[in-house]
Structure formats: C-alpha cells, structure tokens
Image (cartoon, rainbow, N blue to C red):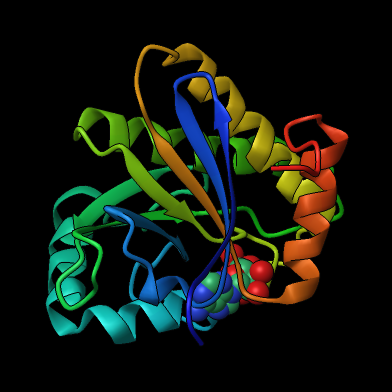
Length: 195
Ligand code: ADP
C-alpha cells in the first residue's frame, strides 16, 4: 500500500498532516511504533515496523531492554532507535494502553504515549514525526476517543513550541479511519474543508 498525503494544515509555525497508508513506507524523519512492553515486536503496525526495519532494530531494542527496561517499557513511555532499513532515520517506540473500559487511566496513558514521543523527538532535534493510531487496533481503544486525545496532545505540544516548525503526521491504515479523523479535524475547527 502506497502512502498518500490527504492534507496538510498549518498550525502555529507547524504543519499537521493527514496521511493514509502503510507507515513503514513513510519518509518522515521519525515514525512512531505502537509497541508492546516487551519491545520485541508483535502484530499489527508493530510487526510491520519490525519486519521492515530488519534485525538490527531488534538488536538495539534488546540492549535497551537489558540496560534500561528489564521489566519491559511501561505504558505511556517512549524510547528511540534508528530506523535501519526503513526510509525513516528513527523509530520512536511507545506503548499505548490496553483498553479496559475506560476506568484504568487509559486516556491519560494514551496522552502520555503521544506526549513522551513528541518530547523524545524534540530532545533529539527531530521535527518531522509520523504517528499511527496508537492503541486503536488489538489494544481496543475506541478510535474516536483515542484520536481526539492524540490530536489534543499534539496541538498542545505545538502551541508550547510555537516558535518551532514541526511536521506532525497522523497516518491511518484505512479509508474509514482517515475519514473519521477528517471529521474530528473539522469539529475542532482545524480543517475548514477548503484547503
Ligand atoms: P495497538 O496494539 O496499539 O492497538 P495495532 O497495530 O493493533 O496497535 O493497531 C493500531 C493502529 O494501527 C490501527 O488503527 C491499525 O489499523 C493501524 N495499522 C496497522 N498496520 C499499520 C501500518 N502498517 N501502517 C499504519 N497503520 C497501521
């Protein structure tokens, strides 16, 4: 599946981009992986990123686990590796929450996953980051609720960094999810429908 830019909207000094396709094809400087705590790969986007990046990324993640996260990466936190065989130079691995009905701090944990991924990018001078819809697959987080949190977290980060120029890309795998996110952008008044 080819990556397609649907739209790009200015926000502060930055751009918010909506893209559809396989995030492993992205030319963003960094892509975010919806990892699991083991950091050893899994299904969905995680499996696709591990397969496309190659075994060198697994080796780097194995050392990160050994040296810093013997018990696994806690939900809401993020670590970075190189992208190896990907077009993207870096991969930011973050663990989203597993949806348990909404009474287990899932909203806050999801916001932390986005926030910590953005902070890690900023610390490393990365200004072009692509996010998949973290937690909305196997982890079962309701899509609309997740993407509102994702968008609000990104907007608040961009307001804080309003002098800087970021490109934050939201990448969706399905037409349905892409359309749903477009509706959220319109509701927030971010996208007026005429760009
Ligand atoms: P999680 O375990 O965090 O729920 P999943 O990988 O199961 O992660 O799903 C997260 C989202 O990623 C889903 O919306 C799914 O449609 C999407 N997705 C799956 N594969 C890809 C891919 N190759 N590129 C971009 N998005 C993907």
